Length: 161
Image (cartoon, rainbow, N blue to C red):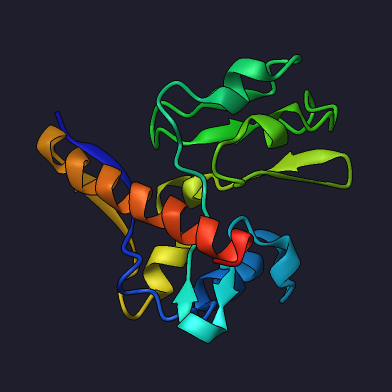
């Protein structure tokens, strides 16, 4: 079975943050990197940049913990979407997300929604560190290895090691 998802290649990321700029322009219609649905923490001393974006988890902790059921899955794109009319800004989803990919702004949870199946971040990523691609079931091993690598890299940035 094929599944279309965002694939992040840590080795290809240059830390340019073009993806962050493109996201803020598409979603907020203004250049405000703080309003983007992804972020790219960096550790300049070791030339390390790690894109952080919603993994659209299969058994999503954010969706499972939401007290108002404001997070649901789009059957077309498989993205987890936040219903802003139901969201109460309690931040339960923020704390539940194992990837740090959700934030609350103006009392509402904000996260990647895959741009309705046409992610802007993937379109502008010249080194192809972010790709919107279909993977067969066996390709998920590659996705998992990439995710493990990014988690270790984030620990390096956050932990300072």
